[in-house]
Image (cartoon, rainbow, N blue to C red; front, side):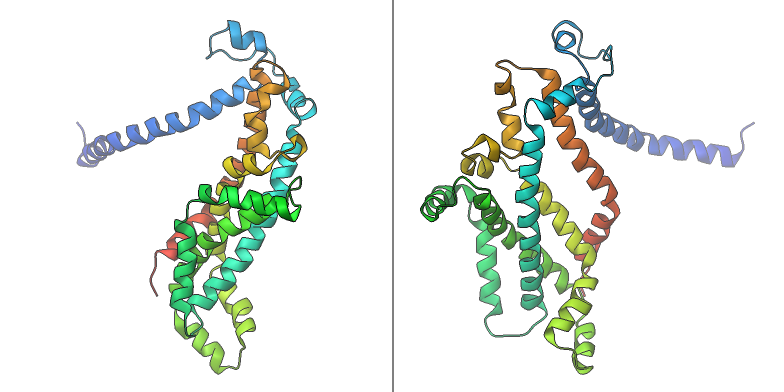
Length: 285
C-alpha cells in the first residue's frame, strides 16, 4: 500500500515531467549539432561521401586539424581575429566604462544630449558606413593593414558599451559616491576605487557580449581585408574550401570546431559572472 508521501512524490514528478521533457528536447537540439560537428572533424573525405552521417569515425586521427592549421592557414586567421578583436574590445571598454560613469554618476550640463548622441550611434546601421569608411582608410593609407578593423570595431562597439554600462551605473546607490566625495575623493579615485569595482561583473558581461559580436563579424572583416594574410577567422572559413579546389569536409569541420570550442569554453568559464552581471543590471538603486 502506497504512503501519502510516495503519492505526493509521484504527483510532483508527473507535474514536472512536461518541463523535464521540454528541457531535454531543447538540450538535444542544442547539443546534437555540436556533437555532430565534433565527430565530423575526425572523419575522412571517404567517410563523409560514402557513410551515413550518424556513423562514428573509423579512426580518431587529428589529421584534419593538422591540415586545417598547416595547409589552410587557420592559425593565421585565428591570430588576425585576436589581433583585431582584443584591442578593439579593450578600447571600447575603457571608453565605455569611463563615459558611462561620467554620464550617470557625474553631474554636469549637457550630459543628456551626449547620451542621446551615443544612442544615435546604436541606431545607425553599420552597412551605411562601410563605403565612406573604406574611402577614408584608403586615403589615409591604412588599407592593407589590420588598423581599419580595429578602428571600425572600436567605434561600432563603443555606443552599445556606453549604454549598457550607464544602465549598470544607474542601479548603483548614489550614497557610495556621495560618501566618497565627503571623504575627499577626487573624480579619478572615485572612478577607479568605487565605480569600476562595483560594476565589475557588469563590465565582464558587457565584454563577453561585445566579444561575441566582434568575433563573429563577417561583413566588416570581408570589406576591409583585401589580402589573404589579413583574413580573420570568419572570412577565412568563408573561403576555406577554395584552398583545396573542392569541399574537404574533414578540415572544414575541424576548423569550425576549433573556432567554436574555444568560445564555448570561455562562456562556460564565465557563465556565473554573466548571470551576476545581468542580475545587477536589472536592479534599480
